[in-house]
Length: 292
Image 1 (cartoon, one colour):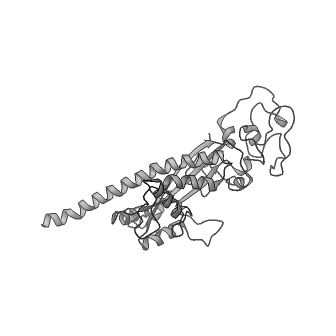
Image 2 (spheres, rainbow, N blue to C red):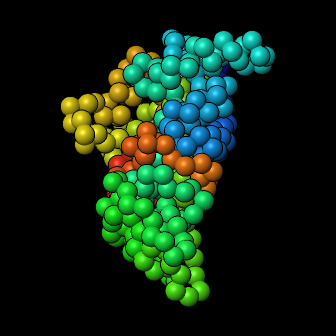
Image 3 (cartoon, rainbow, N blue to C red):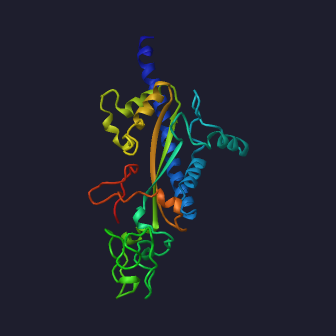
C-alpha cells in the first residue's frame, strides 16, 4: 500500500501528461492544415484577413475547446453537430482571447500598389508592367509608378524605366515576394485534461523557475500601438487563475496570390518592418521568415 501510494501519483501524472501532450500534438497538426486553408482562402479572396480567419476556424473546430468551465471541444462527428459548433464559435472569442488569430507577414504594404497585378512581380513591385510604355502613376506608390521601383526594393535585372527591357531578365525568388502571401496562424488551444492542463501550462510559462522570458516565442509583448492593453501573458494567466488553461499554438504557411489585393487587405499588410538581414520583423509575426 505504501509503494502504491508513492507510485500512483507519478503514474497518473504520466498518463494524463501523455494524453494532454498527444492532444496538443494533434492540435499542432490541425493548426498547420488550418494555416494552409487560410492562406489558400486569402490568395483567391484578395487577401482578406476575415476570410482567412473563418477558413482557419472551420478547420480547427474539432480541437478548439468551448468557452465554458469544462472546455472540452464540441462534437463534430455529423453535419448537424458541426453546424452547432460553428454557430457557437463563429464569433471567434473566448473570454477575451480569440480562438484563431491570423496575421499577414508578407508582402510589405509598400510592395503592393493599388491595382497591382498579382501575376506580374514587376507590376507588384512598382517597376512597370513590361513593354515600352511607362506604368500609370499611383497615389499610393511613393515612387510615382514605373521606373526604378519603390525605395529600398531591389531592381529587377534587365528591366529599365517604365518596365522596358534592356537585356535578358534574371528573376530571382526575392522579386516574387510581392506576389507571395505569407501568414502566421495562432490557435488558442484550450487544455482540458485535469491536473495535466495546470502542470503543462505552469511549465510552459516558467512559473516554477520565475523566468517567463523563456517562452518569448509566445509573443508575450505589449502592443506598441496600445500600451495600456494587457499583454497576452497577463490575459492567459488571468484565465488560468479561473481554471481556463489556454496555450497559443503558432504555425505558418506561404502561397502565391491568385487574385489582386483589395484596398482593405492592403491596410492589413505589415508596414515595411518584415524580417530583414538583421532578423528584425513585424511585431505580430513571431515566426521568422528568411529573405529568399
